[in-house]
Length: 418
Ligand SMILES: Cc1cc2nc3c(=O)[nH]c(=O)nc-3n(C[C@H](O)[C@H](O)[C@H](O)COP(=O)(O)OP(=O)(O)OC[C@H]3O[C@@H](n4cnc5c(N)ncnc54)[C@H](O)[C@@H]3O)c2cc1C
Image (cartoon, rainbow, N blue to C red; front, top):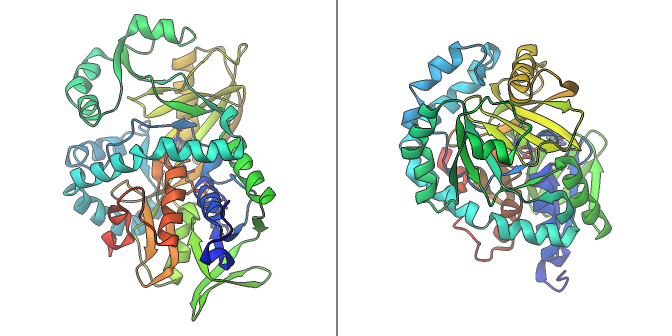
């Protein structure tokens, strides 16, 4: 750790101990800053707790594109589809919807930005995993993305998958027999699909967060468990008011996931960040290691992953208030899909839901607050926050230091929505 930098005396607060806040804190600490994380929960207990664990290196196509538009009404009308919008959340969705439409015109631009970020994700991960001894939580072995019908496979061959291949993603098409050989425990719900051989996954998203937090604290970082009620720019820095006291820092990083919106509103910055809730169920089976890699069922937009010596089926895109009660129908849908994927002989051990921070163009917001470069924003990673966590933290640190960034940060700036 370089402690001889000019800014080594600077105190930085990071709000949020999710995977994005933790990664940002580690990179800042590595650069020599004195870092304090503030979170109302223990590290990794937000959206970062419940994800499917996939380090989705193949994910470089934003969802925001014209060809999605005609599909949306059909998806919303179908109660068993993964997509839903709570009627109580419609007012919050209006600015998002407006920017979604505008973002469709910038699809290629967003795709390039995401591809650039992905190109540095692996090497950035390696730095944090090696530094924190987290490698044992990461497994190789690729990942499968399956379709129920041959028709969908043929469509993918000339559509999304071809687009991914053209962007340099390593993938191959696999037929029914090849899938059966790779994952014999699966029921034959699939016609075949795609194999991504380079994809890695974590067998425990929560342990990964805890591993990062442990290293952070052992190396001088401080974690305050408290709710942040107010943030304010001061003459020489920022103040952060929690339920118990007001803290003063030289700089602030806001990495509070979906709840970041409430905080940046206080700083006069209105961004169309929304809460896209996802669900998971944990599945016990007689043979917990029967699944060797994550398997997506693309028609249903779910991932079945080997996690915590068990299996996790995760998915759903429910636009709703962060704190609204869970919708039982989503869990019922996941349970029905689990049976189709694994057969009737399964038991469920727990259910979970959480909120993904979602931006209209499905690329994250990483950059300084336009009105004050003492505040840096890092949220809005939607479906790929785990995947992009390390590279986001690195970019945050580079922006704070004012050094050349590993990736052009311009497309991630909050200014694109202002
Ligand atoms: C079902 C599901 C499956 C997913 N699968 C994958 C996957 O396979 N691969 C992938 O890459 N990504 C996946 N994701 C996405 C990924 O989990 C998220 O993008 C990522 O966890 C976001 O991390 P974060 O740190 O921004 O937010 P969070 O993990 O939500 O962390 C934000 C933290 O901020 C704290 N906070 C908020 N407001 C305050 C406040 N006022 N005061 C104090 N603390 C506050 C919260 O307590 C929380 O701990 C999935 C998400 C879901 C829901």
